[in-house]
Image 1: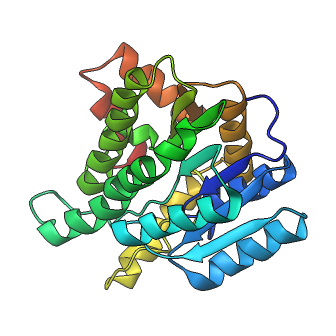
Image 2: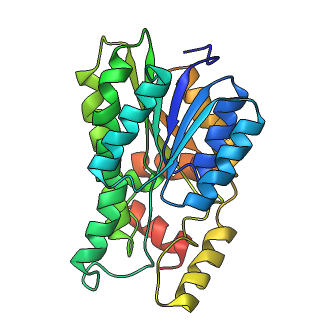
Length: 268
């Protein structure tokens, strides 16, 4: 999909971070946008920024873990624009570090509802529209921790493994069709994912945010350009950041020992 001008692009989690940067990058490429986020205020900021670039935009605030809301969003987008060429399932959340043993089932459910069910809803509700186009792109944002498991982040890690598995299982099902399936695996990106954690232990959240900031050299804008390049060149996988590329290589070379590298890297 070399020419993105006038393509209809959907981006979830567009209120900040990668989602906002991607919406702006796609707008700069000439796309028309349909964006969503759970946060009304930040979504409105993105809508205005996209509109200021001259791109037509539909912005709908809702939680991607709600199937009915996702279904209504897909219907709204199809009604306004007629069809969809690009869907990027980007919305995701995480938790503070805690052992699997001490993680309540409710925390698992919270993360999984957004990170995997939200992606699944985005895939299934928009896939018929994507398949109706001459060429289309379905992009699911996972994480480098969909390849290398991160201890004390089991809900997030497991959900991102599921996103990668879903994407890679769907790809051969759509082989020979007009739809390209891309799974994105970012390393550390300077986003608000830690600041958005609903945590009662504010000191722990701030400490994790500080550690995250020190280890996240890649900007959302760089990540957005990498994703757009993946869309243009119909890539199956997009690794973002030097840290992601290094970790991916370590896992490939030392599949049974990479955990030691992660523990040392994160001081666990």
